[in-house]
Image (cartoon, rainbow, N blue to C red; front, side):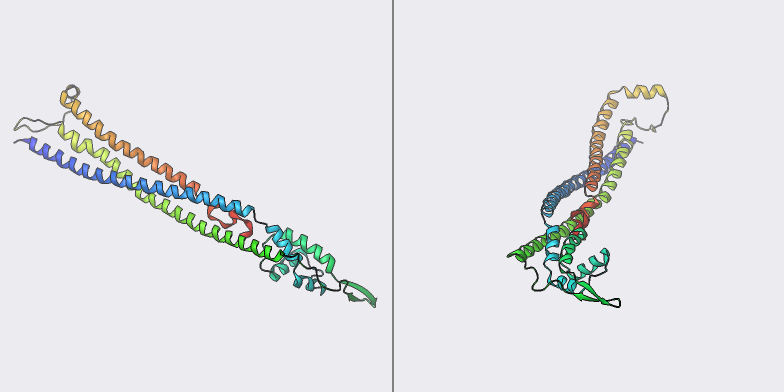
Length: 291
């Protein structure tokens, strides 16, 4: 009986399987690494576009837009003259004005500030006529204040600008959502690769290095597992053991290197997902007036 054939075939088969699996895993890992880099680069581009949109939003004149619309709203002035806003509290006034003009953005202070000036000018007065009865007087006669030339064109241009920025913000939010989904899918790809690399790290010494150390064996002698410290120490100092150790360290180092790469990819993924924060995917974060 020649056990060398068995150990030789066993080691070659195990090494071939480990090599094939390792090559596939490494190829897969490099492909995922390239995709992750591309996705992170895409996020960086989206972040630059986000900063650009935020800068343009900061240059919008929401306050001026609301005040101008309230100040020159002829329907509002007519309702004030008719007493429709008499004895209303702040909330009721705001609700009524927002319903009157749906172009307004929700900036209560700007609306109230402009409304108070208009109301003071166009509000009706009442003259007592006796027996607890009062007669309404219209203090204002004639046409209402006319908006300066070109104001409505400027307001319309400002509205178009704001609407465009809101659309761009909503579109960018969808891109951030897609980017986050892409990052999450990589978790399901990296974890199995990491597990397989660890299994290969364990399988290589057990299925290749350990069987090889039995060879060459004399014919008709069965291999024995011994726990004799002196024999183990003596076998370690042999030239065969040194070569096997070098072989072991070389292959294990390659697997460890790619295991480190998986950890680095995991870290980069975690950082990228943290950077893709909820603020970037919330419309209110771009402007409170878009809600």
